[in-house]
Image (tube, rainbow, N blue to C red; front, side, top):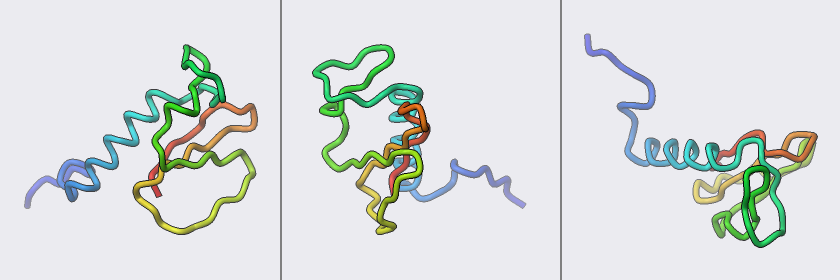
Length: 87
């Protein structure tokens, strides 16, 4: 019986989306999204996000349509990024 490791043997598109999600999470987690021109240690400039993105505030509503090219940035109650996904 072969050893199956989740995430290692999935479709290429799944692995790419997963690595993209991890990359953006490492850039954004715990930061605030700002309209400013520059990103720093505690803020990330909205202009540096991918073209297809949406910001979902804590307790906010979002449509449930599936768009794997759209990055969803979820904010915690304090306004910092708590999660990133592509759905």
